[in-house]
Image (cartoon, rainbow, N blue to C red; front, top):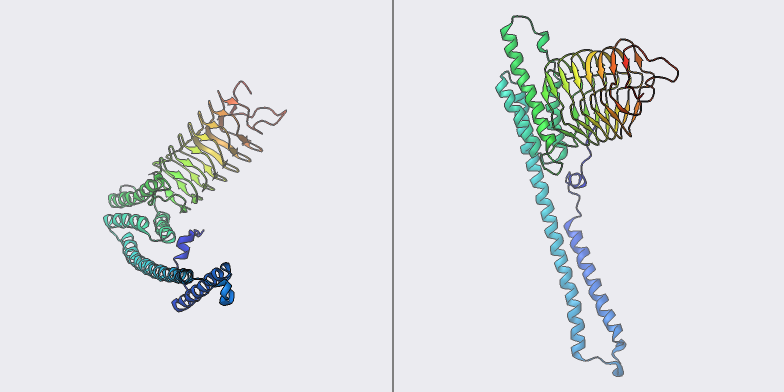
Length: 392
């Protein structure tokens, strides 16, 4: 979705100032009226109407009234000067913004052309150039455009290592070069998400579109997703290690809906889900390992609704559920292993309503706290493969 510009940046999109002649006429008219009002008020206070002999004022008092009136006029003149100076500053700022935008556009065009070069080294240069352009962008919208291009590069068709022709050294070298460029994009995004939101170079709050991306590795560790949207829907995690360790999800929407985890390791170890929404709805875990060990679910909502666990090793060992809503409603466990061993459930709402256990091993050994809702319906036998802690 399009980012909403802050008021100051929205104001800078164009100058909408009154004509200077109108401003000056109004200022002088206001000054004349103010001077007349001051003089007349002083006259009334002295009760000198008509200059009657018994009410006559001396020349010093009259001179003071005139000085006061001229003081008001002088103040109005200063106000006019201030208006003119402000107008000049606004015009200068708008001109500087146009110049900065024009320079940004020229650099942007060069960087994008580098991304399309046949040489991996040139493409790497284009990636770093775009990241630098995002840092220097004169408006939030231009920064978002640079981020969008970097994400779009990751969405381009990509052949994973497992799908390469066997014994083709040239194809493998091309793959390794392209993978390095892609992983560099991910590292740069991670580095900017690590920066505090007060930092001018922070990308927190911006939208990240990874829809349909094939991940065969990449490092997001210690990134903070706060505000904005990170869309991993339809992504494929195939091979390598995708590192989300110690990532913090706070106040953003992160969507892994319909993502496919087929091989490799996706590591959410020690991640914190503190606010916002993280969705794995209709995701498929058919291979590899997905690790949520020691993750903390302390706020917001995490949804695995309609997900399918059919072959992966998924670990929630020692995870802490203490304030969030975590839903496995209508999830299918038909293969692989899902471990909740030594997990702690205290204060969260964890639901397994209408979940299907038909082949997986789902292990809650040593879990603490209340049993998740709907895990075993009242009066129903414990499904095969579901291992409960003795306290339940």
